[in-house]
Image (tube, rainbow, N blue to C red; front, side, top):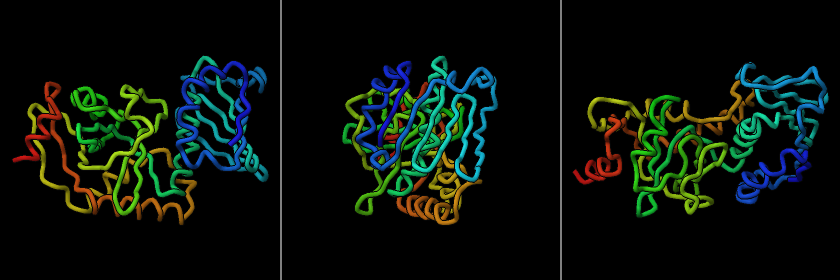
Length: 266
């Protein structure tokens, strides 16, 4: 992948992207990305938080235009012209959240909307749930275990076993020694805030499959071809059959690592 970058974005690129470009296989393909300041499109174009947050895709004869509130991508063959506003740095990450997941799928990897913590034995615990269900909170409560990521993480399979790694798609990486490493998945929990701490019985297969499927992030389902859709379903199905899912009910005073450890030993 080759990048051509407007000078106003060089610092952001060097600080936040060079560290992951070589570690993500889909970024090694023959793709050229030209990163522009939105002002290059003229005064009729503007980006900002007041715009529609939903991703819109417009397919034309020779190009595809992708638009969200803080980025515009014009795709012509293997060229991607990315336009963002220097005042809204999230545009870069939102572009990556659109650009990467479908390419990760080619190597049987999925981006999960999740938080992941890693215990002292380098085993990973995945916590799932929609925004507001406590993924960031659970990461804070899991100390002294390491936090891999509290928003987006990459799930993959190697040798029949499932591993997870940080995605660095705009989320904070507080434990940099865990970055660019893969950790074997031990447990998966669906989160639910409660007035007491307890763990439900194992989800039945259909519920586990659907809960995982709704946690797959960055996929434009309406523009997905049938083969890619089936590949996502197959990967989610295999994962849901390999790793049992439970529901973790927790309070804000819960010491998550201790509670999980006690539950596993009981």
